[in-house]
Image 1 (cartoon, rainbow, N blue to C red):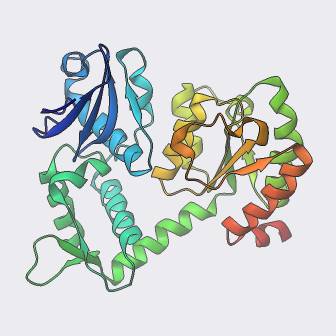
Image 2 (cartoon, rainbow, N blue to C red):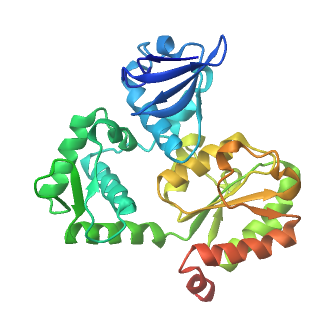
Image 3 (tube, helix red, strand yellow):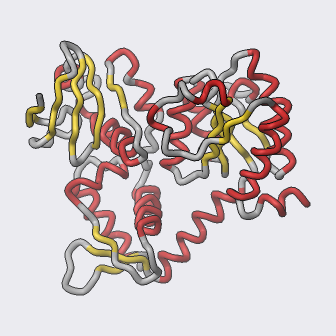
Length: 309
């Protein structure tokens, strides 16, 4: 049975809620997207600890929903969702995100893109639609965007906007780091050392795996830093490490290419959220190394040049 109630993340009054049982509800909100709430989130999310940070969760859930993934919001592990949020630190970072969003939606160089102010602001971790409008006007004033004549909600990139997009994409590809998200189980070490690592190195990438990175930071902060500074993410869902799902989703949200892996015998147990992605299904390390090398070269245009450098 479904009811219409206020969304516990954004207070939207037409959120559709479906009861799963005594402890879980499924929420469908036009602003935040879809998520499972555990133990009546409308109560604990309104506490002093979370009330003013709900907009961050709204952004995380919306970005996961747009990728076909589902967030499970439970008070006991809610902090991990905050840690994966790529919240802009200033208007410049926010405008960059908006430009990349418009670029991604543009099917042609002169297309005006319809912006849904009242619901799409959550994609950029903004507090409300007025912030979104403010940033769009700033971008227009910087000559990055222009509004369609006679329209109030259609925008397209101008020449300076295209130049900024080119700069942002080139900066992302300057890094030769490739973040590897996978289980750290002992039996998976051979997959990393004999397949993933050599395939990346042969195509010019530096493999980054959190258990071998030297750092003094909080693990979540360091992981986010390493993903942001990578131009490729390899994720192996063998053993179904929960962190791998979040790391791959975070990379997708940043526009970083992701290559999906899983051992054939383990593939049937994969999480439903990744079913629509083209996984490399492998038998052993030798099989994976060959397949992964081919996929990297097909995914990253300048990988061949890196091989020869």
